[in-house]
Image (cartoon, rainbow, N blue to C red; front, side):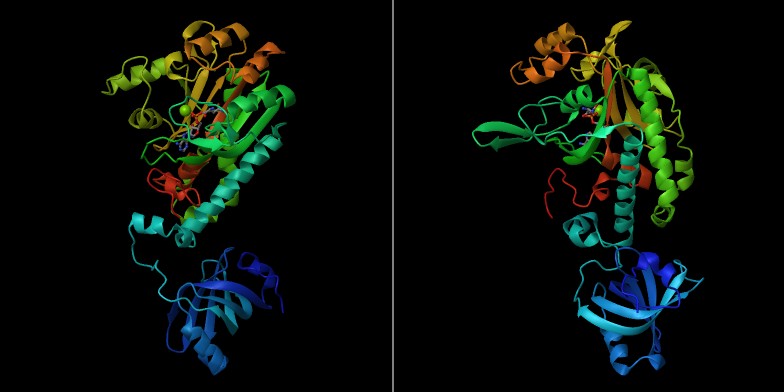
Length: 431
Ligand code: 4AD
Ligand code: MG
């Protein structure tokens, strides 16, 4: 008997008797036959128990199984064209591990708050499992892209002495006798790493103590932050579009079944090929004001503005050259027009909003010093960052991709809360 069988690889065990550790996803019975919907985390298979072919003990054991009971099930794997997976198991043995009583999540509809309170159990549902599988595939595709294109992964610190993206949304903690903050972005450290390794990327958790309660905001989210020495703004955009197209096409190739199982219109994802359109902030303002918005030059875009712009395209779109005043201190001004910076936000289609923020960085030591003065940044805290401009400064660019917004877009979810196993949101720290 095969004991290395999991549901994912039953196709390699057709005709064999196998033993699988599983849970009962669901069950139905027709009197003389019981149909066990089995899941083991790797997939789903129907186990068929025929009364006339098993002992009374096995029949009764199967009968006692409730939703989410755990068991070792033994049986013969058969091809079954009528089943969704193409396979079925003829059950010959049932060994109950644990009988579950009153599982809180039943096949009926539950409200979001109830499901979020039971997130530790909700994760077992077919849809939530599919989302986690797709998220893992997105992470694999991200690493594959950068590892395959000459980047070295570097891990910036999570505990930091100062801010990277402005001071309004920092989580403060005590670091023995000192003050420390949870990182908002690894970027500044990645700039140092790029000067050591050329092309680098980070992948890790970031924290924003933002009182935003929207479908796009998490308090704790994961970010991918590449940083590239000797790369200008234009070249960075080319990397970004190739990167995103690679991620989407890889997920389509390897997770089509999961995407379809959660009802994603995959034809929309098939459109995601480079290059992506680019519009300047100025053009975006003009377009929006022509659409009935009333937004003056110099103001930042909100979700409705981004959605209106994204609706014009089937692929993500870059909005470039924002006014310096609404962007971070480190962005390099356009030499032809210093009131705007060499930056771009990548806006996902279908209303998913900004998934990437990036820019060319200031490499001139005097200008950086000037920005420090304007923004009243502590030179003491950032001495190391100023050193990067002092010793062998080079043009360089980088960007940050928000993983959860990317998962929401690729999966077609209407809220980021389902894109991470245990979301941290305004007013939610449990479970
Ligand atoms: O635009 P942001 O704030 O850029 C940075 O942090 C830069 N330092 C990145 C860099 O150049 N290395 O954040 C980058 C991305 C956003 O486009 C968005 O996808 C995601 O991070 N993001 C969030 N995702 C979920 N919840 C939040 N509260 C987020 N804030 C930003
Ligand atoms: Mg941004």
